[in-house]
Image 1: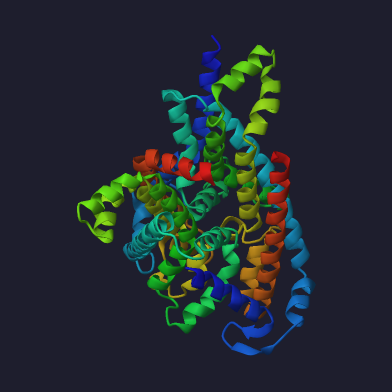
Image 2: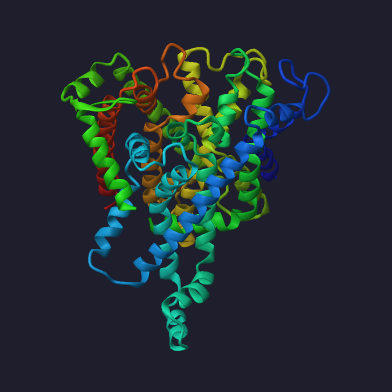
Length: 268
Length: 261
């Protein structure tokens, strides 16, 4: 008896959360004055987007390149770092780990100005590689933390028996331990991807060449085109293109994301 | 990794005491002028005031709602699974994408709500931005609080019920104390994140109307890259923010730890 109102209430709440996304998708293909899609339904706004300056293809490519590099760097470093923290004892290990965590507290917006200067000095200004390195760096404290937890959860016998069978440290790591920490790697990778794909202020500060902009910045800049008149249709289309990969990935990996997050958060 | 963090902090400290132009580079020592210029900037105190106000409003609403949502989807079944996913989907979007979405949603030309002014006055701009942030982040904080809730053994609720505790009493005297560490984590994350707010205001309001929604990070950005092109002064403000947050986070840790023990 009590259940029906509860369903209606909670269902309404869920719809409220889904509404903006649904609206943007519908609005991006619906007719609207001041856009390329004036009458009838269709993909006119996406055509605008495709022909904006360097073309959406270029911006998608930039974003994809930055995201993939960030994911690759983050996975490589956090895998080795987490493994080292979990399995080896070396002097200063605990201090180093505490410092790693303390980095989480440093406001990253305040680091962007020195990083801008630093990248200029080593010749990586205005480059996608430099941008990926900076994004990786901001991912590493959390990623290393999570990978350490994942490695510590693997039973020690597993690695030992592999070593008894004559496998070296790296072969053990690659063939035995990596499969065992796969859920952790998926979480770390997903986090790094979402962060890199969506980051706004870092490329805003670090990238000035308009052909090297990642997608969020390109869509945000696009609003100011055409004599100050904002093309809302193209903006909506841009949001859909930006959001789609994130939502698809999120839904596909949701279980890992939630689980990985919970194990990390519990111990934090 | 450490090099990447320690060196920038060193550079920002050095820049904060230098006359450092965006294009000119190092031009000699400039202390304490950098810091006094920051404090004398006519936007400095309004930016601090607005950022603090925004942080308080966001933290209270966001965590309150997130706790409500977490309680709502506590049990696991198919329906709450659907609810959880719906609440979490916005957090897969980037803050910039979400801001662009709401930018279109709020604009009179394309808004489904007609000619309502969402960003026209200082207070409506604040509340509209808070709505965006609540939409984007409540699922995320719900998840964090859910971790805390699921760590509470069922017997404790049973015991409270047998002792005759009502729903509200159970919530206040059993649930809240037991998820204190999750709440503390959420508070620290939310306060720090809100104090460093940038994307949402840069995209939605550009600091307007009448510079009423300029945040501290926006001010740093403006000092460094727009108009003033003064990296030294921006670095000085960064150092102030760094210290402010350090003190605040230590205080939060102490305060929230202290209550726990």
